[in-house]
Length: 283
Image (cartoon, rainbow, N blue to C red; front, side, top):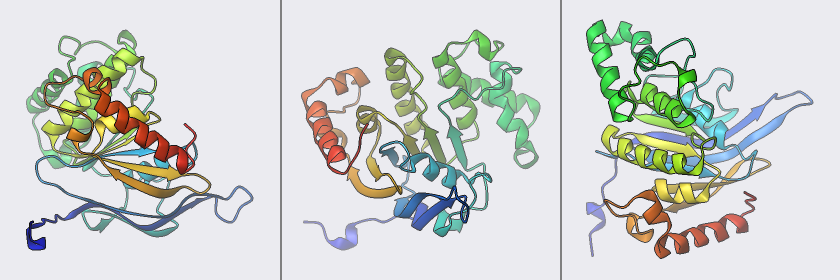
């Protein structure tokens, strides 16, 4: 048996401390999106944690991502504190990147220009030459499987290809925290499976901490190290489940379909589904 002194702890990368978020406070339309949410994610070496947020509609999952990102329209928490690397969130930052459900590419820019956009925007601090920015962007385009499409415009791409461009544009800045709000929900099932494999591969390469909001429990189980389960009205974090790869039959070299069709995965998914229904989930 290991001594407690051998258990390693790491600095925090994202911390919610008793966070409550009320929108339209003091008006007839007042709405409590989150109530007393507390969690801590450590900044693990090499590969960060992959956290899936699940729960019924209106339980505050997307609000959690928006608060981490620091969007001005969402604002700070009404109560409590949100820390990124032990510093309060003051607004969006290059250390955080967000991928949305709706494809977020600029329609008037080519694939290459879209992926370079963040580099251009932040070049006052990066100090890269144009040739270096283009080289970095092309390398990321290759990593997401879009080589040969650099001069195409978004309207010339399929939904899956557009989402690959959005992923490349987010990852090209090497964010330490990646936030994904139902990124694959608009895709057909075969494309969705492809994207799950792509995200898994890229996550190990970029060494980031990832949060994903998903309505698919199977997707949550396959992708994540930890599942946060929320209840609605108001949104509360009511359960956390840590997942080990061996518990779901996830092995190197196995495709998402092979894993998700295995008896280990199906049995684990049933347990998660039962727990989800017990706490009041409806999806």
